[in-house]
Length: 222
Image (cartoon, rainbow, N blue to C red; front, side, top):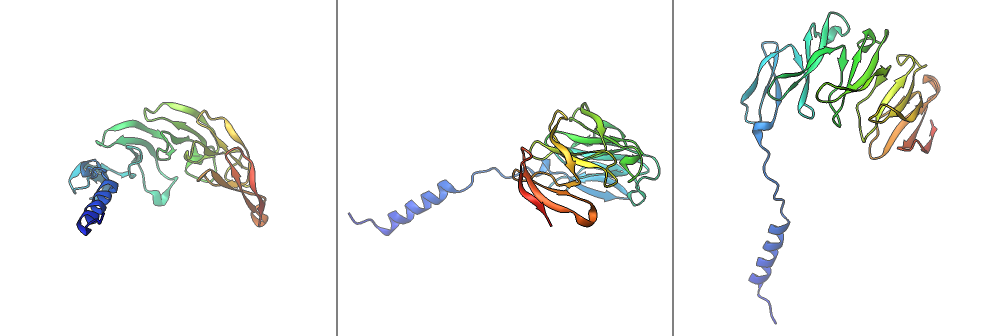
């Protein structure tokens, strides 16, 4: 049977229509964009409407529904000087985790790193890093010299003097246990199941890759 061109065209249009994405458009009212007015930080939504009045000396972009808030002397050009503390606000501008930390990182995979001590801001001094959940509960107590954010279920953590070559890096799980022992002189977060690690002093450092079991898949080389 001969099929007309019109029938073929209708069939093609049906296929295209069925495969076209049906995802709803993004609700612009849920967007939060940081703005500065008169030296204070606030937020607008995706339509340009001011939704959080400019009232904060310093605040970050939102991550997982929360933004870092800094109160006090938050002149980051003189980081480590003056008195300031970090906490978190929600998308309504309400403080949900009181500013009490000497340093924090943005939320990632439901946890945010926090730090107490002078070493949180400077390359010298005491620093103890841990992790909290979105209620401010300490999920992993402050105990590490330096940490990174969680990616793919693991986070970088350093023990020893992490501002010098004597510090060693490994990876912890969400309980704070070292899933990969601290043995590297440098490491990068996991991406697609693999992480870059480096061993040796700065002048003769070699780089390789490990998987999530800690197995070296590329032996460190120059």
